Image 1 (cartoon, rainbow, N blue to C red):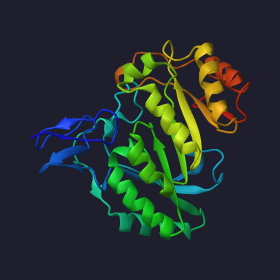
Image 2: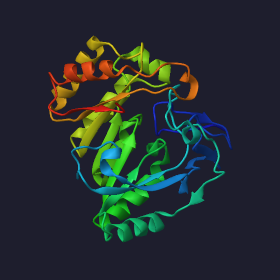
Image 3: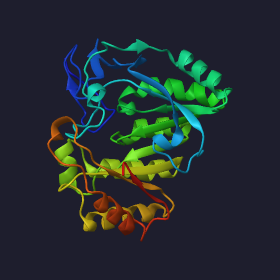
Image 4: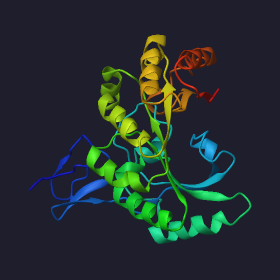
Length: 276
C-alpha cells in the first residue's frame, strides 16, 4: 500500500520501504518518516555572512549543520556530494539536545555563536529534525536560520515559521521553464518567500548561470517582484562556477553579475554580488 509524503509539492507516493525523490524521507510501516533525522554530514562554526546573510547579526558567528538529500535536481549543485547522497554512510548522529548544547556552549566563546543554521544540503526535507531543534533553540534564547530552496508545501512551512528567525531562500530563476529544468516550480518558491518575509528576516539568493537565467529582463521581473513584497529584502546575485553536471560550462562573467546587480538596485535597497 502506498503512502503519500505531503512535505513538498512532489507529493511522492511511496511503497513500503521506498524513499522519495529527496532520498531522505521514506515509507516505513505505512508512515512517512525522516530517514536522515540527526544524520549529520557537515558541522562548522561560520560567519553569518557566509550563509549568506548580510543584514542579520553581521559580524557574528553561527553553528552550521547539514545532512544529506535534496528535493530539487539542479545540474549545477555546489554541494552535490551530500545533496545527491542517498544513505547515511559517512554521517554522525547528533540529537537535537546535543546540537543545541553545542550551540549554547559556543555562544559563550569569543566568536559569539548566535544559534544554528541548517544549511549545506536542503534542510526542509529534514523537517522533523529541524522542528525539534528549532523549538529547543528558541527555549535556549538562540537563533534558528534556514538556508533553503524554499520548495515546501504551505502547511508544514506555517508550522515551522514561528520558530525560525532568519532564512536565506534560493530564488534560482524567475521563469516557470527554468524551474522545470530543476525539477521544481517557481510559484511554490515565490509563495514561500512571501509567507516567510511576513514572519522572519528573509534574504534571497540567485545563482546566475550563463545562458540560463542571466537576462536583464528576467532580473527586472525578479527584483521588481521582490520589491513589491518589500524593497528592503536583501538580494544576493551570485556567480556560477563549473560543478556537478555542468563542469564544462565556463563561470559567469563578473561583468554579468555586476550588471544584474545594477538592474536589481533600481528596485531593491540591498543588493550584493557573490562569488566575484
